[in-house]
Image (cartoon, rainbow, N blue to C red; front, side):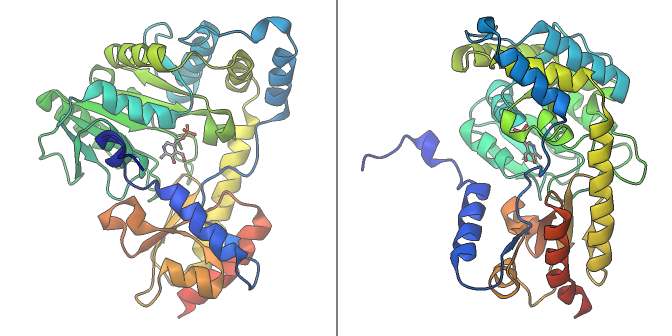
Length: 366
Ligand SMILES: Cc1ncc(COP(=O)(O)O)c(C=O)c1O
């Protein structure tokens, strides 16, 4: 076999690909039904009117060619309008929005367009594993976030957080903006779970903070708010210079997004929003069930569709998988500080969750 270029070799093992393979192998072994609480894949799709918008659009003869590379202006208008209504943030749709084929792509594009090779990027630890991939792809180096007394070229933030399910601490966005100004650094705020917050909290956009758009962008994903993970649609919003660089990069690497998907995205963003609240309320209810079942453990969740919990000393994720036949995501995959913790997903049916919790409840009782 020929040796791959160094930039491919640098990429870490993709955490979720490896996790899925491990869970599939365990499921194939003999034993009780395996309960998979390891993945973060929305279990309910978008509302009916969004599906209808997709099929009506796809039935038209004039939508099958290349769509405009930078996305439909009406889609940019739609997300800007939602930012105004839901997050109280004014967005210039023409200059402050890039349309992305899912925000995972944006995580990579930000690193490539904000940081020089050899630069330093601060990452949350524990944090979403693809941030490490972005750093590797950009030929940069990462350091774990440990407060704002650090010199670096960029910072990834993510609230509500995957995997810790924490919402943003008071004043942190403001401090991050001051840090970026001092260091002439860029910030990416990953808002993938923005609408999924509990305890009556309001979603908090990074861009609502003064000065934020001078130093960074926010990624908004259609995957979690609207159950459209497989559709691959998201946005980078905020700093005009970064938005422009991302669009330039996409002009060279993508040729737009299938127009019916964009039109269905407009329907999702501008149509009835009850499904967003229903989804949020469902996860909050399931979170309450999970925290009650794990009562003896340190288990946390203020948002997202995850619960982050500390494993008892003698328990590992591998043992949960083989002995209890419950899959959860091992904390160390999210960074060194995740060791000894695990992430449980609420994005499953109530029946699956109850079965998994029944098995996990034995841990808390011990
Ligand atoms: C924290 C976080 N960021 C980004 C993504 C990517 O979302 P998408 O590419 O579907 O927009 C995910 C998906 O699970 C996520 O958990």
